[in-house]
Image (tube, rainbow, N blue to C red; front, side, top):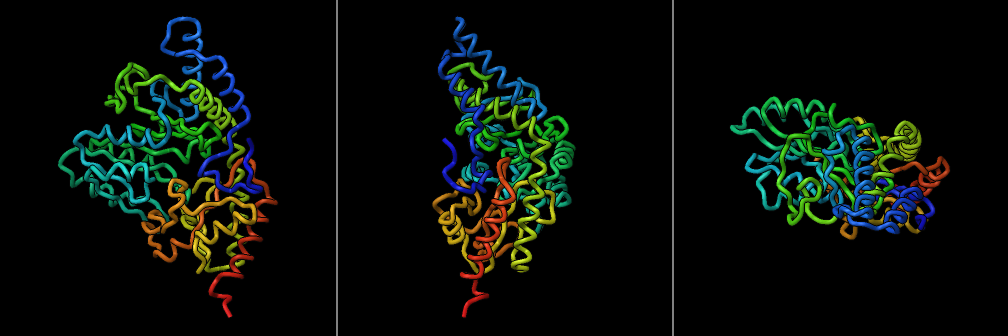
Length: 375
């Protein structure tokens, strides 16, 4: 079923599922079969799973056998962090909640970012140098709220110099920018299907060949013994098709940045005080987090929704509990500043007219609600 919103600008929360994916998922469900069975139906299902594994691997430049299918990006992140063993754990202060939430039962050191949202490599090297034992580091490739891209290849080189391991959450980056698992040099990488037009409830952890991991789900030999349980064949097939479409559309996806830049310039013209977080850093081509000075993010989201425009306040995983973003606060924003920012994330279907409609509604709300225009 198509999105009911007239204008959908929340691709980072979930991308509309591709029609080709729906067709492939339906076909896999109709065909059935357990990929662990040795009869014809089982072998057919196994072939479907392995074809999808190759498609996902091709999207990120890894080997097929390095792909571990999971129930989503959250499980992939959790599985990666469970592999740290006794190593000291370091994470950036702008990681997704599916990384930060795991830290409740672990002792971790938070790595700071600068005002643009980029990790300070000099500080990272100092911390690594002071460690007595090799560490485990988790740094996302592109931030889900601001779109800011981290220099993962440089970070990986630095971490490996000190004998550490690097996990990279690439969930928002996959399908939006080219990714080469080998070139980045990371040891583990998390992915999610629904961020690139695939089904919800499907993800993957890319695990560098030769690196062992303890399964969090035990009971069977699926996924080369790294994740037990009968594979979600239909979901995996859908993930594979979405990954292939995303790979073929990477060049075209970069053109979305021109729409985003036009939107940001228009808003700056309306309100020079408006802040686009991470604007000075390398970013995903589709992502913009924008403050409306003096107007709460929750009010903005509701007003845009009433106007038929879907946007969000920070991470969609925090829906129902709008609060000041930990990402923006880590970048130096105050509670008030962070509390007035919304995330606008474009996608392959976004048009210039939709951006113009968003800007028009942004200006109307700003002039109606901002204290600057109060009588």
